[in-house]
Length: 331
Ligand code: 8YV
Image (cartoon, rainbow, N blue to C red):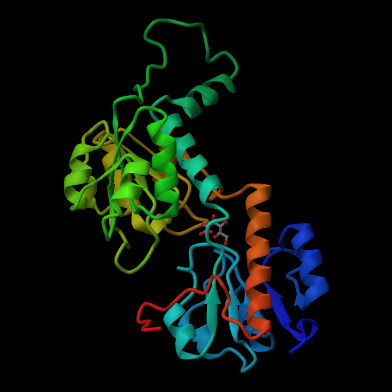
């Protein structure tokens, strides 16, 4: 089919250059006012388009996929994580799913590193003080003491592209890197990242000073940091999450913070986004960010280009390069 006949439904506004290029290539429907679509809005796009381009704010579940129109053949996610899409249901309906890996690895790793620095050094607390008239009354030896990074242990949960990029950054700050992953990495990658594999998550949690969550959200990782596992952390340990909120039991985290049994947390993602557990707002040792780890102009551009490449490959009869396989895949 010529590309100009490919009907593409995009759920959110994308960078201007990406939208113009998509409009040159395809017959595109945009969501003009850019608010997150409700189910009816998603169903309408899925009824009469060949390709849907959703984002993390759209939950493309089994019911939506089963009721999609016969034209829908590709869901080209504008994002790396695909936990917003029921991949198995799509596969059963013969709908291909693609994502945008790699282009946001460095941006996300930079933000994770920024939080790994900011949390023990109380950077955001200091800034909050300076925004209040009269709150800073002058320097003193015991003022705003944080914890030194060098020599501390960082435990990375999920050692994929982003986890590895964080490890490479963190060694420059003198952190000792440990990781837990479904599989141990090749020794060459371990030595590049100066990272030591810990075969059980529980053991790693007991030993590290800072935990960085970098695994995807899947049924197996839902509440991986449960109340029990958070209880294994040392009382000064800090948790950074730039992956998905669902990996941490947010309420259990708030319990530990309230009890002073954990050193702090920096969260860019939440269990029920955009809602956050209001208890988290009460703590000075908690940094809260609005899901912005990959939010750079360059990153969004790269994501848009990947979406275009995936759609073009599919429209030309090829397998999209960033195809996401279902969990049961034997292909
Ligand atoms: C994206 C993300 O901005 O790509 C991901 O997995 O979490 C984000 O950083 C978002 O997914 C866009 O859909």
